[in-house]
Image (cartoon, rainbow, N blue to C red; front, side):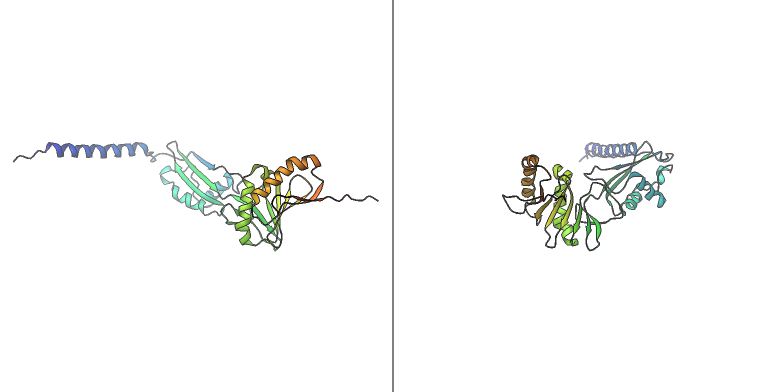
Length: 253
């Protein structure tokens, strides 16, 4: 009985051809770094609602301090994994992705931890809380940040207060209107607005979406007619009602 070698031979040839094509494509896509020198470093921050803690120059300084700044270095000697690991050690960094290009560039994409509120408690605590509830040291400054003062425990700051601040941050109207939160002894919240000489009593941070919606309507259709400085204290704690305390006129002598 004769053996037909034609079919197995064709299969082997197909496998060899496929392996060659894979190797050729891989070799073609992989930049030849033997003579290349890094001529550019691109540091790109992912977009965020609030300003982050770090800038491009600070990232460069981190790399220089650790002796791994890639500019003017041989591309083949640049360890992108080491660059990622070094930057990730910074407490304000969420994620880092680094890669090389065929044009001799090293690209670093960064995501920073997003602070949602700054805590300046009456017990002396001073720190930021990010969107995931992590505590960040306040040795860096970020602008346009809501400040919370008063009787604030870290547990309350990392949970209910963080959730409330995150809601404000993502609401265009309240992000522009609220500048400070004052926390009372029972975790009730007072709001200090940007416009108007009044304080808003929210109560506990429960159902605040509906409370703030009612207050927004009151601002648009009530205070816009009566005057922003007519009241000194506005209570929105209870459903379906807003209690206002009129501002006392100062007596002149």
